[in-house]
Length: 317
Image (cartoon, rainbow, N blue to C red; front, side, top):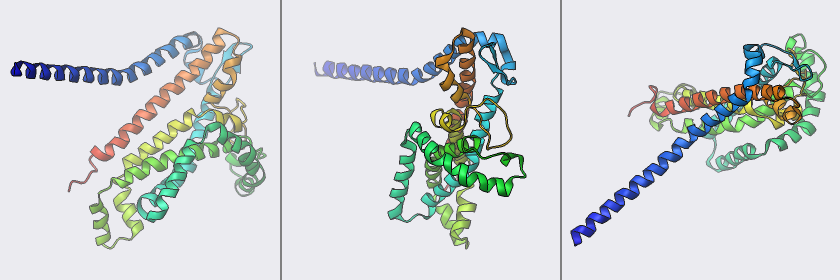
């Protein structure tokens, strides 16, 4: 009897383990299934525009809902340039804050700085957009824009009147929004560097900065690149804050002072006003491209961050 009860208990435990394992596997499998379902739904909804415009959709600048002629080149340009400008501003700032937090900050100051970085990431984008309208736009129009125009006005990037609303303001507000991602990931990656690596550099006479530059940053390089990719994915998909400050004009201008448009912004502004099936399909077609690019960027970022722990640069003690 005792042996029978023991065998039944073991069998019951194994059944429970198999059930638990099956449930966890189903939950894990649900994620790619959901992504695949989203992709299929977007392709199906965008199919009329895919059939009508094909690849010309990406190299045409005409966006005329009345004539049902659609091309997303100005929106692609605005999305890429505003995101690139955000990275140019955010990467040095975020990396500097991350180095300070990981290598130089006094213990009593680490928690307050980390708290404010996390708080910045938690602020809703519409609130940041309002701040951009009432604070950043006037500052760009009256201070930063005239300064750049006076000192760098010979360059095509800084020609024209600084209106405040435009590509430069969108890049600045995106930089504010992606800095926390760069700081958080880069800080954690640099903290994974073995202490022995720092001590070896210091023992050879290196200064704190030389230790960071020669021992910490090369080790964490892949993770930092991953942080930049995560920030890029965030910048590519940002909608509300950019919509409020970029000007929403479908044009391609070299000047950063000029208004522009992005793919997320045009979808947010015009989807509710789309009056024809082809118009809706064109907007979804643009969203499909943005979806694919964002997924690819996030996947690359994850792979690069993972290389820090498992890549060839790891030092074995």
